[in-house]
Amino acid sequence: EVNIVALYPSASTGVAMLFGTIALSYGLIVGTLLGLAGMKALLIALFYQHLKYEPRSLSSWVLIGLVIASLLMSLVFIQLHVH
Image (cartoon, rainbow, N blue to C red; front, side, top):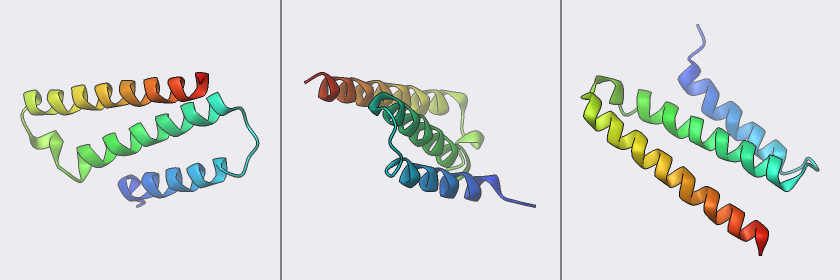
């Protein structure tokens, strides 16, 4: 049986490194890398830090923080792209 918790972060790191060598549009690369990073962070938080066993209120705060961090990162990338 393959452990997806170990496989996905390794595979997403490989995909991120591969995107550095492929000539694609800047927006596509940034969007994909942000999505991969968010999924990796969520997977690690849910399984390695055992948030699924914590009260829902704590998990909600972690997810709210993740959403806010993602929005701030997106705004920074958009601002860097515009200027």
